[in-house]
Amino acid sequence: MYKGYKKIFLTLSGINSGSNYINKGLSDWYDTEDKNMNNDDQRFEDMSLDSKTLDALNEIDFEKPTDVQKESIAPAVEGNDMIVQARTGSGKTHSFLIPIFEKMNGDDGVEAIVLTPTRELAQQVEKEAGKIGEHHDIETLAIYGGASIDYQINHLPRTSFVAGTPGRVMDLMRRGELKLDDIDFFVLDEADRMLEMGFLEDIKWIMSRTPGEKQIMLYSATMPKEIVKLANQYMEEPVELKLSEDEISAKGVEQYYISVGRKNKLSVLSSLLDNEPGKYLIFCNTRKYTRILSDRLRNHGYKAHSMHGDMGQSARTKTMNKFKSSEIDILVSTDVASRGIDVDNITHVVNYDIPKYEKDYVHRIGRTGRLGKEGKAVTLVSRDEMEFLDRIEDFVESELDLHDIEEGGRVEHEVDYEHHSDLFGMVNFRFSIDDDSPSRWDIEKKLENHGIKHDEAEVNNLQENGGEIKIVKSKAEKIPKMDYFDDVELIEREARRE
Ligand code: AMP
Image 1 (spheres, rainbow, N blue to C red):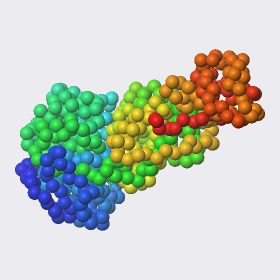
Image 2 (cartoon, rainbow, N blue to C red):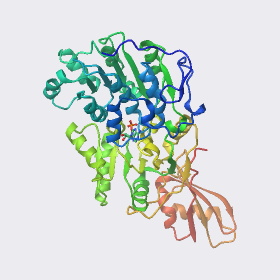
Image 3 (spheres, rainbow, N blue to C red):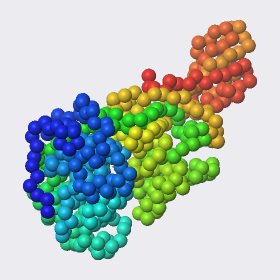
Image 4 (cartoon, rainbow, N blue to C red):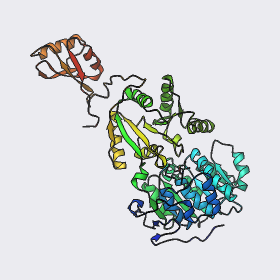
């Protein structure tokens, strides 16, 4: 088995990839953006990889390494512990798979384990690993709940590479079927996700049953304090890589938001779907709403499906495969169900509900614009969701553009007084009237005749032939119906909080 890798303490350049990297304190990220890389034309063939690995890469049509692969393969092959900030879609999976297969030898027993937050990601990592493993004559296996444990138990004796979710991994370890006491490689994929999902104790439990000497590689789209703490606890002088902000917050993704109340979100979504046909991944914050929304979309003739944690594993896999093969073009999902999914050519990510956690925003939009392709991320924001937009903008360090509501979709737009009401629940109208000097008293009388009590409305800014009326939102619909006024116009509220 591979043993005795060396740690690197100095700035290195030119190892295989011709790029630079450095071991630094955890507080001091090495930002690849600052570097003079000049290695855009680098190919896998130039990276001194085993011919079996090159054959595998050739077979899957990978010619050039992505940025994260350029930066991390060489130090990982050297044997360094790695802490890499990279998002799904950056090519991060192969940046740990390639070094692992370069050094595994297929002896008895499991040599490498990749822990993932979700079943889908475990399946995906194993699938990619299998394609390289085939050329090295190394068996791979995915281990996750919801699938036959007997199958997993039967295959384990021949397996050197395992990708799995913490729960099933622990289950098989407790049964004595999975032994990690001789592993060389321990990968935490989407580490931030795992911590958010409460897997920290499980990770520690598994880690404590592995040998002291092993190479740890941690991948995470975001680097909250807990991750840094985890790394400090278990890693030895890790090489740290942080891709440029562009890479992390989805280069090539056009991001904007539309200010729209809940009442009209479906209508805005239908305009998008009708005006810009494509492959849509739509996010809702709750399982229940993913179902409601996909039902509503179907009622309007869209071929939409939902994916959420209440579904059984085989139904989830089936839906995902249909989405991958473009049998379904509209998938409505929760954050959990979509984690780590690897689907090419998603043209639009729509945040139907704005994510409550800014990190989720980064994960969601990372589903489009993969590997330099273009994509759009559209966030539908109601007034009461504005505070989350502010937080997201702080987090991604840029302001999202505001786009107008597009109309013309098959779901009609309705007037949304709720969305245009102020903090006190009042809606403002501008009216014109055929009267040089309209009387407040007359107008209030007319309002009363229409069932609007005098403490429910306020007449303001009276002037020649017009003025304004502020009215409680529950009675707002009465105003445009009053023949007394020549013309009535709703004063729309600014999208941003004043
Ligand atoms: P990942 O970020 O690992 O989920 O990878 C995103 C997608 O990019 C996957 O579909 C990979 O198969 C693909 N990919 C990764 N590396 C390369 C590469 N060097 N060339 C072409 N495609 C790649």
